[in-house]
Amino acid sequence: MNSPPYRDATVGALLTRLAESIPDNEALVYADRNLRFTFAELEVEARLIARGLMACGVERGERVALWATNVPEWIVLQFALAKIGAILVTVNTSLRAHEMEYLLRQSEAATVIAISGFKDVDYVNVLRDIGAVGGDKLPNLKRAIFIRRGDEQCPEDLMPYEALREKAAEVSDAELNAREALVGVDDVINMQYTSGTTGFPKGVMLSSRNIVNNAYWMAQGLGYSPEDRLCLCVPLFHCFGCVIGVLGAYTHGVCLCPIEFFDARKVLETVEAERCTSLYGVPTMFLAEMEDPEFSRFNLSSLRTGVMAGALCPEALMKRAIAEMNLREITIIYGLTEASPGITQTRRDDTLQHRTQTVGEVLPEMEVKIIDPASGETLAANQHGELCVRGYNVMLGYYNNAEATAKAIDADGWLRTGDQATLDDEGYVRITGRIKDLIIRGGENISPKEIEDHLRQHPAVSDVYVYAIKSEFFGEEVGAAVKLKAGEAATEEELKSFCQNQLARFKIPRYWRFVTDFPMTASGKIQKFKLRETHEEELSVQNRER
Ligand code: AMP
Image (cartoon, rainbow, N blue to C red; front, side, top):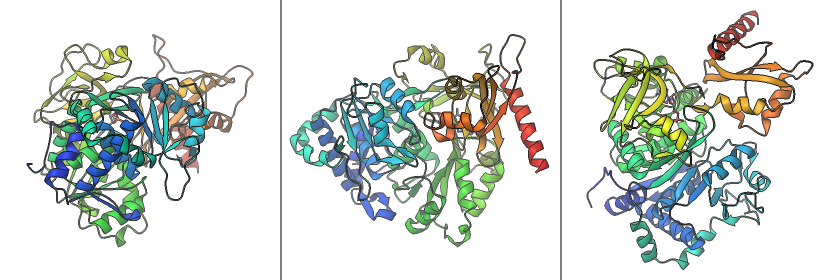
């Protein structure tokens, strides 16, 4: 077997290749739990769990929702599910009951696999409340599997993950091989929910060709080899974690050192203890690490490269990361879930200016163009317009939503990103704004429409609009302008608590304003930018007066 890098493989076969070519290299390390897998061991584990899932009746093409932090089982399942051709549906760890119910219903998932909970959300209670466990409200759902952490007990109404090991005895290696042989590189292998350019979360269908090859090119850009070790602190449920992170590392035989959920101190400890050479994050993560009061006591000399992505990467922050964290070859990646996700990447050896002021050049084997969003005409160099991308990396479509798919991808295969950008004569892309109605708070995407729809159900609310408010730390925070019904009263606190158990915490507006009217265009469209400007102005006056 040739040594890595690999491409054009299914996700399941990628691990098999590594287990054959570099079996004894470390593949996955959780330093804080003393857990270490080599590639050979990880392949054995993934095959065992794959056989267990087959024994439970998990079918090829079946959607399996995985609701967990970055636990080791997540990565094992990413490969185990791929081997049996099941579709891994990743689930944001902050979802609340009605968001989870929507996801399970829309994806028609037959299996849900969950940990006990995260922060203030008890996943098992949620699953019971929405009838995913012990109910028949979700007709497609057949099984719920529980991943135990520490000394937790598995609730009686869920199946313990460990039971998959015993069940595996019912399915032979040959049966697993036969199933795996049916899985092709163009089959849907992964579904991720994103609000995309408009409205409600949609399931982005991605194939192995999409994500393995996209991961390969980004990892090439990082100059990866099996000598590298990646500290992975971004969530696995997002393509930053499971594609750029896991698959990017494994196309090149890189060892993964994940953190269960982001904690700046843990990142610093892991980089030092495991001599990591690479580190990823959204801008706020790098900031939190550098602002840790004990930052200077950590030895980060092993670091070489990494990725900053997910939101606008401020030039000053990039410069600090290069200088203070020894990330001399760090790159910026720009992309979106529908593009697998990477579209552009800065080069490790670019000028400092290009590495900090642009999002780099288009990745190999795909094309970009900038269009006038109204007319669709391609624009000349340096003109602001909507960035579109075409190539192997464009998603297969949104699950059960042909209409939204047709809006996102045109007949010639161009995906509209909803991002405003320029492309210069040398091929460098700059992201200059956003055309789609989306808020990005510290790398978490928030659809204003989802919050507006929820708040409009409040009996005192006549209408409401939600928009971004500039924030030094998060990049953007959520602001809301509320118009109450005549004679009705509601306070900010009441509206917040109305959101509490319905919307993930990061979506709940931080800043509120009560208004009597909304600014509108002549054609009756709400001018969110005006709402935003007025609100920001009010906040800065308040800050000055403080
Ligand atoms: P997601 O689908 O969650 O990956 O979110 C994708 C969106 O995040 C893009 O459409 C952009 O608006 C934004 N984004 C991602 N990376 C960058 C970047 N490097 N610079 C600016 N915006 C970015």
